Structures are given as C-alpha cells and as structure tokens.
Image (cartoon, rainbow, N blue to C red; front, side):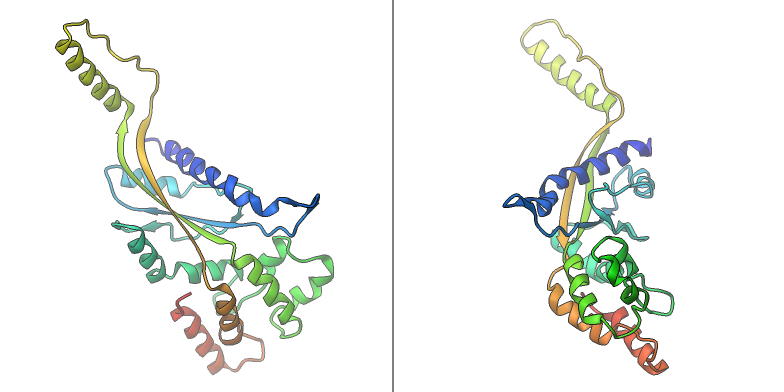
Length: 247
C-alpha cells in the first residue's frame, strides 16, 4: 500500500480542525486581539489489516503551518476500545510530559529553557536577554505567565482507522449489489464506472487538550525547573518529580 495515501488522509483531517482553531486570531472591534497559536500533536491508534502501512505513514505526517508543531518521537498507541481508554493510555505513556519537554526543550540532564516559546513569537526583542539567561530566576515570573498562555493551547489529535478497503473491493461490492437488484427486477446489469484508484476507509478522531494548566505550571516551575545553582540532590529530585508527574 502506498503510504502517501494515508499521509494525505491524515493531513486532511488536521486541516479540518483549522476552521475551529483559527478563531483565536479573529478581529475584535476592528483590531487584532492577542493571538496565541494552537499547537498540535498527532498520534495513531494501532491495529487493522493495514497497520504497518499506517505506522510508516505516521513518520511522514506534517503538521499544517497554522499550528505549532508538537509532534513527538512516540506516535503510535496500541489498540484501544474507546476515548476513555485513549486518554488513559496518553497519561500512562506520559505524552503530556513529552509535550512539556517539547515546549521547554528539556535536555538530557533534565534542564529546561524557554527558547521554543521565544522562537514561536510570544516575546518581543526586549525579552531576549531574559530568554538567554532562562536558567536564572531573574524574570521567571514574566516567563511563567507567557509560557502558560501557550501551553494551554496544546492539542493532541488521536486517529483510529477502520474498515479500510481497496477501491477494487469497493467497486466489486457495488457491482454485486447491482447484479442482485438487476436480477430481482429482471433488468440488464450495468457495472459501476471504476473511476478511482487507491483505498477507502473510516477514521475516528479523538481530540484532547492539556487541562488545569495554571495549577500545573505553578508546580512545574516551583518543583521541576532546574536552576544552575541547584545542588545535585535537588536536581535528581526535580528530575524524578517531572518524570513521575501526571499532567
């Protein structure tokens, strides 16, 4: 199967969401109100006849430009029966933690910085010095407020494909139905025009957003943010708190 087909299908699904998300940039009284771009993470629920092709296609998925790209290395969830199971699996796999790591450029030693938030345009040029010294406590109150505005716009789209058939299978089924009807009505059977190639299927999309961001951010900055002056035991403790936290 051509992975390109599923790439187009996945991309089309995210494009449909743009009509809703884009409202954050609407005009208010003739002036552009404060605009915080939404960020998007896309994941796939595994399973089905074409599982391998779909998983390969997920490696090529591109987030539409109207969203900030929060794609993660982990993009596949196991087979799951419903939206509650999906949500629980996202928490179990620490996907929210990974989104925080993405936003704050978490390094191998557990330290965070504000470079991604800065590069996504929330700050003006006068904040550059604070950003460059983001490990220092100076200016953190301002950075905390700005970071919270973006984090709460983090969405996770989980896709689940089913009933995938080749177009040949689809047309064969349509012809079988037409033959049955023609025979019952004693009419001439006319096969359906086979105008399309590729595949046809169903897809369910589960859309989640990080919640309770204000309370989470206070805990994040107070108990998980590592500063240059932190002692090794404090660093280890903060790393453990983040790794085991349930956002």
